[in-house]
Amino acid sequence: MLYISQISFPGLGIDPFTVNSVAFRIGNFSVAFYGIIITLGIVLAALYVIWRAKHKGIAADTILDIALLVVPLGVIGARLYYVLTSLDRFDSFGEVFDIRSGGLAIYGGIIGGAIAVIIMARVKKINFFLLADMITPAVLIGQILGRWGNFFNAEAYGSATELPWRMGLYKGGEWIYVHPTFLYESLWNLLGFLLINCFYGWKADKTHKKYDGQIFLMVFAWYGFGRMLIEGLRTDSLYVGPFRISQVLGLLFFLVGAGLLVYHHFSKTNMLFRPVEEKKAGKD
Image (cartoon, rainbow, N blue to C red):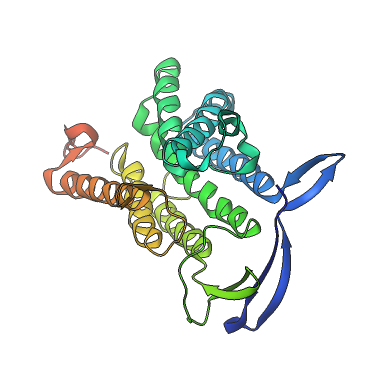
């Protein structure tokens, strides 16, 4: 579907400009900026995981094998989640499969991707939490870029505001000024990616990580907290009854992730509550 939108940021001195959701056409086939950005996010995420895997002596081919299952199951999960939480938006069964018309949910992608990682961890005989530590920061990369796909579609924005960084949208013959929640989440995830990787270490021998699964928990807690707050500003949330489902899940992600991080810190245990192996005196 073709979307041409008028957008402005008057508080920042940016006058109205036109945004087209379609990047280019090949005959009757249109290629959307959203699809290009998501694809770029997948590629960069895969390169990040390959780089992390190299630190652990895991071959790039192994990561690519894992990606061949993680990516499609992640997309299927993202679409299935969206469909199941917004059945009233579909007029026919065929629309369920029309992914080009939009409708992907990150939580479904996480669930589908996690299932794939569990399967491939067993197949490749790699510790699941070791893989999860390498992969979950890559999920932040996908969200950092993916939210800009929402920008080109003029979607995923928030409620009305007069804050200096408000975004203007020309809707229904008039200008509305709203929270640019796509930008909030992109910046929140960028900050989290940088901080968590500083803890993780940019070099193999410069890490503060104490156990496999620690980075996994940090990413979930960070993303969950930010999404919980930002979702409350949005006007297009998916609901289950009176609840914004993404806000509820964000809260759960934060509570579980932060709770387990605190528990492991004070109980001196590793992931799945394994006792920390104390170093012997005089030994490295």
